[in-house]
Figure 1: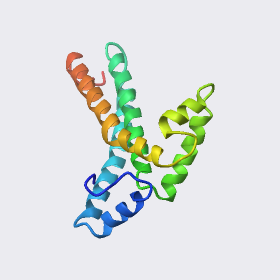
Figure 2: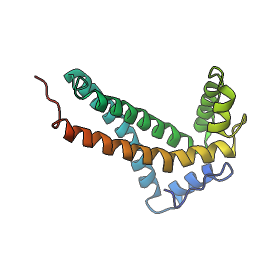
Figure 3: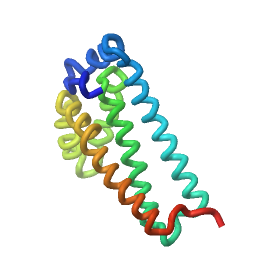
Figure 4: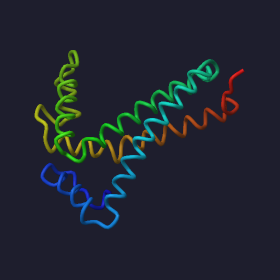
Amino acid sequence: LMFYYVPSTDRAYTDIASLETNVAFGMLMRNLHRWTAHGMVILVFLHMMRVFYTGAYKPPREFNWVVGVILLILTLLLSFTGYLLPWDQLALWAITVSHGIGGSTPYLGGEVQRVLFGGVEIGQNALIRFYTLHVLALPLLAAIMMAVHFWRIRRDGGMARPL
C-alpha cells in the first residue's frame, strides 16, 4: 500500500481511489489490510477478556497485564491513525472531532493540538503526522511491547490456565 499512497491532502483520496481501480489486486490488498486490522482489534479485545475472566492478570502476572493494556491502546491507535489516511469525508470528520477533543484537554489543549495535529487547523501537517504514527512509531512501539509481553509470558511459566 505504501508504494501507491502519498500522504498529501491533495493526493491521498485520489491515490486510494486509484489503488482500488487501477492497480492490479489493489482493492484486494486494501481490503485485506482493512479487514485484518478489524480482526486484530477484535482478537486483542477477546484476548483481554479471556485474561480477565481467567484471572491471569493477578500476581505474578500483573506487569504483563499492564503491558497487554498498553498493547490494546496501541492497537486502537493504529486502527484510528489508519482510519484517517484515506482523507475522505469520514476521515476528515473523525480528525475534526479528535482535534476538538485534543484541544479540550485541561491546561494542555493548545499543546496537544500543536504536537499531534501540527497546529490549530487540520491539514497537511496533521495527515503527515498520523501517517508517520501509523507506519513508523506505533508499529515500532507495538513490536517492542509484544517482545516484552512474550518474554514475560515465558518468564512467568507460560499461559495462565483456570484453576
